Image (cartoon, rainbow, N blue to C red):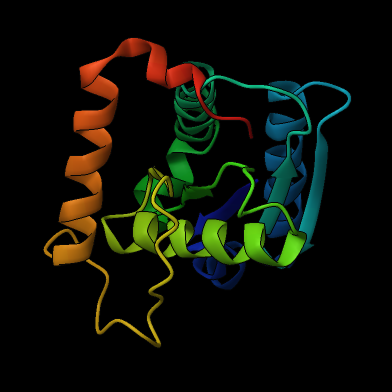
Length: 172
């Protein structure tokens, strides 16, 4: 499951008006639609938050490539808004596995990953491989300096650096 949030979207509405904000939401939806397969489920959760559920196998290499492509499309298409008000996208991701397979648990972990991406400078993504649950109401500030985040990020790096076949172990 992937959760997307447009950073500084409120500033777009406040500066350019709601019709322009609606146009940006529509264009962002088109970016998502063109980036995923027809059997992937894409939806708008509300406001400037979108969700994508990918029901079939997707390797981590493919996922990382896809997320980087989406971020580059956002940077390209919305560069004027990024320069003016800081518009960008943050993405949280989590894989389906035996312990994380309900919508509620997927959403919880993907939402936590989204908070980590946003609190790590926005305009990026975080894949919640370790199923981190700490959110702003439980953790003081989830930042790059967060010891849990450092530990999990290092574990992910070691895991994927140790054997490139590990990139294929996950299903999203």
